[in-house]
Length: 98
Image (cartoon, rainbow, N blue to C red; front, side, top):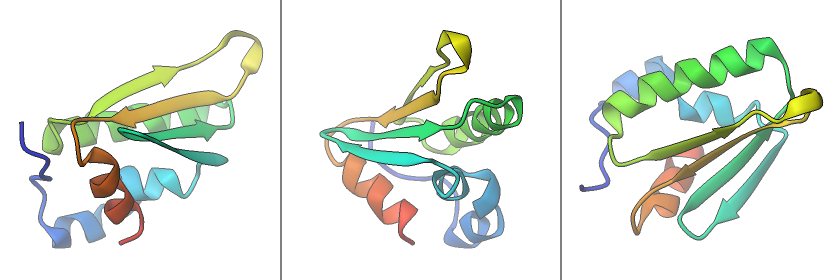
C-alpha cells in the first residue's frame, strides 16, 4: 500500500489539533524508530480518549499506518507506536514538522 495521506493540506491544517500533528505536541517523549515513532503520554483518561479519537481519524486517511497502543497497569505512561512500510518514518517526520 502506498504511503499517502488522503487528506488535502488544507484539511490537515484545519484539523491539525485532532490529528497526529496535534497529538505529537502533547507527547512527553518522541522516540524515532526504524519504521516510525514511539510516543509516550501521561496516563489520564482525557489523554487516552484523545489518542483513540486521533487513531480513528488517522486510520481513515492513512490506511498504511500501523497503530499500537499500550496502556500499562498502575497508571504508567501510555505508549503509542506508529509504524509502517519503508518511508513511514520520513513521512511522519515531515507531517510532524509541517
